[in-house]
Image 1 (tube, helix red, strand yellow):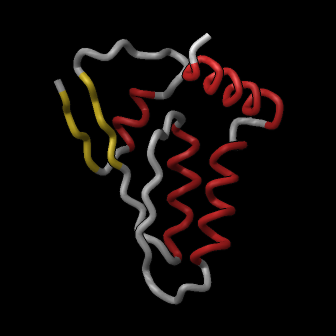
Image 2: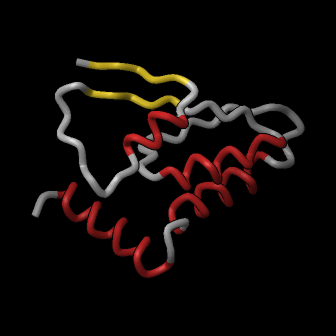
Length: 99
């Protein structure tokens, strides 16, 4: 197995065991803890969003953060059916097309 295979296996395993919000809830809690008391609008980049529920949860951070969703679309990429590519593209604020 490749490192990527192991990471996907662990990630999907945790989502299956603890629920679909497992990873995004960890990100939300970290951003909330770090920046809720900052007293200013912050920028926080979260890459590799693969599921529609993740951007929905992250948009709840708008009380003290600007959330902008960029979706990168690769023409030559083989789509991975376990991810919400079509939904994420529709939900994106900006779509960047790469060849």
